Image (cartoon, rainbow, N blue to C red; front, side):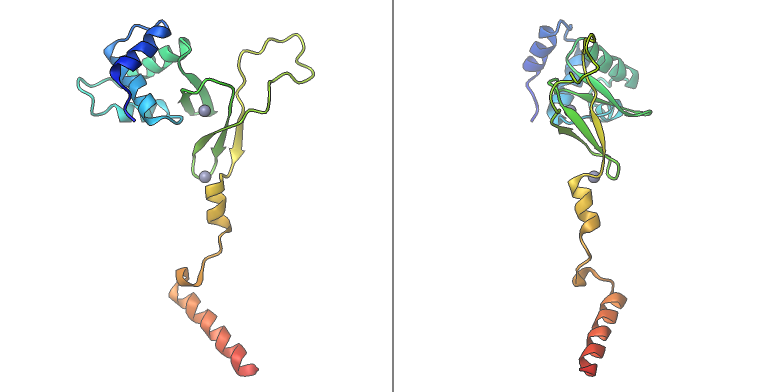
Length: 166
Ligand SMILES: [Zn+2]
Ligand SMILES: [Zn+2]
């Protein structure tokens, strides 16, 4: 859902950020799309905005929103940084097959033994693996009507052979 420009402006002002045209556009798009976009994705979402917003401006704006506590930033790998509007403690699951990033519950506060004397400001909890959707694709055996013709024919042949021997 597209947020009202006035509510985006309020959000910026509450975090002590001057609501410039670019900042309203960038935050508005993130609110509209949700998820965990990369800076390039946000830049893509803004492609139809006139006057156009430069890629460097999008990067700077995102960093500015992070500095003022409106967004969280986390790295998926060396090359991929993602932005997140959800600020409460939660972890992320990255699917190594389809690349999807999902929110997962954070297992309690990071206060395990051995951390006495440390003050934790934030924790990046990132799990990698295969998401349920991808696992389903792998585990589902092909049904006979999805089988290529030659395989279906071979299966039919086997049935005929079996029948003739009984
Ligand atoms: Zn997946
Ligand atoms: Zn998240």
